[in-house]
Image (cartoon, rainbow, N blue to C red):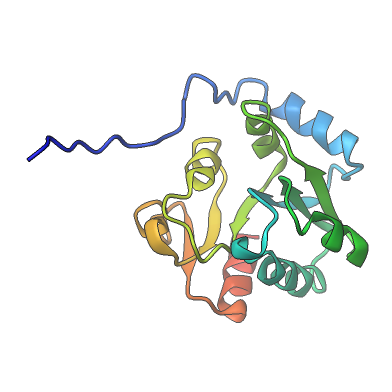
Length: 173
């Protein structure tokens, strides 16, 4: 009997600026020693099992093995799997650690393609942020993401299949 209202979460476009994106891109690439000619796959979110990071790592490895110039995967966020991933020392995989909001918005300028492998998402605000900052998205079909990405227009939603996920990253490359 109570009034129910949906309050959509979104991206605060006043905090999102493409005006100094190139400057941010150069500064962050310099910080992590990413060459200017490199292509960067970007993930923003918690570094946890439920975000399916192992899938993302396998996808990156498959794409990177046949790609020139260099390809990097920048994982922006913190979480319990951080040290395990660092310990694997996978070439061109960089973990930034936790980056607070709104500074994290500047990290989108570094990416060329936003990649997201979580299978438990209800909303996926990072996808909205990536799109607001001009990045195409490759993500797995999961919960609320169906309403977030228009497959073939601003990115791709794929089934939970490594081959198809990799193919869509290659397509965007």
